[in-house]
Image (cartoon, rainbow, N blue to C red):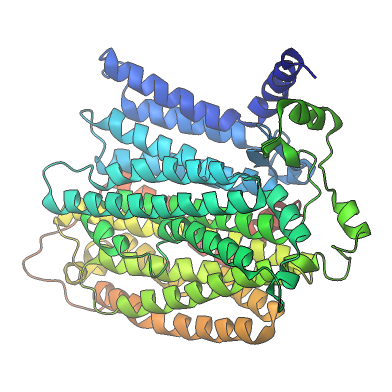
Length: 571
């Protein structure tokens, strides 16, 4: 196989297969380039940055939707693109639609609050769309280097967004802390990637799973086995987890979150708490399923360190060097336990994620008690909810070796949680941003008597807070119930312990959420505060993003159906 044939094959795969499935990300790239050109040629009066960002987000969202509608997700077959660096399946399609829909709503919010003015609008929206592009890559990452690239593409713009408000010392301090923590975790994660890739000889997730299955880690852990290799693999996995824990603001890598949320604008907090969490959780699923289950993937060796002739041979034959069927024939994989040699990998992942989820959920809820700043309280709330969502991932991977259908149900529960969480947190931070513009305050005590000044806003905020607790009949009840159900199905001492702690944390969260409700609805309105009027458009925006919290609480079937379709091709 000569070089000319290899290049033709790669070009054909890129142009005919990969790029058509990458159109939403290309639309974001084109929007970013257009906004930068508008800035260079000073055409911002003819093409306002909001208009460009909104149009680009809508076009990207339209390109991400299935051609036959949302009901046609079952027709999406899993396919690796860009020689195995990314994967296109129902999960990546769902999360991409989620991220782009959030981008559209977020761009509208920033226009209404006025944080992105004509002076820095291009910069602001370029950073937002660039981070969204990185999060889309995170959701479809299929290679360790793509994982690192996606996390950095999402993180670096976020550092700048945290300090986007000029002249505020606290905002600049938040951005600096965020950047320093992010740089440290990026270095640790990259070193972990090098350890994993060095041991197994590949950075391609399905190929790593094949190699780990062939290593037979169980025998290495037995007396007389090569435990040093297992130690290196475990160390690499821990270092890789550092980067994910940072993006999730999971304990003990949560230090940046409260300070950044307090110093950054409420709009940026909404972006970090919703989009960043969704992408990081999807990536956590990718790693857990990619390393804990042997997939029969047609292009597994395209991402390995093969010579050009070998790559070309694989691309034409579309067969991995060690197939799923071959592993079963050799006794490495069997039908009853899916892939027993990978059970140590799954156990390591489950224990690590479950412990971090327990600590994050408990710490977030307890630390939120004494907060007087609404943004800082929501920061700890975000940590707690991240821990709750990580429990679903732990349950899914625990079920992976026993009951794939129940494992898919756990991931569906996670997707329902993420979807509902979009409306809850976006609505909450929208209220905080609009009230900040009116009252020039973000202290909880200044929200006293809001029910008398802005009754509709107060009612929507109350509904959001009660939904964040997880009480029926609001939408936040269903995802928590599904997560608890997944933990029960996973069984075992660890998962039952997580289940009990999750239930206790739901009760604990009642106190600080209802404290804010009490301030809004019961406490007397202060004499020093004048009348508050948000205006028609802000009030309409709050109503639009908050109504799903009520509607999906009464009619959750549609979201559940979409989430279940998004998990159809995980195996």
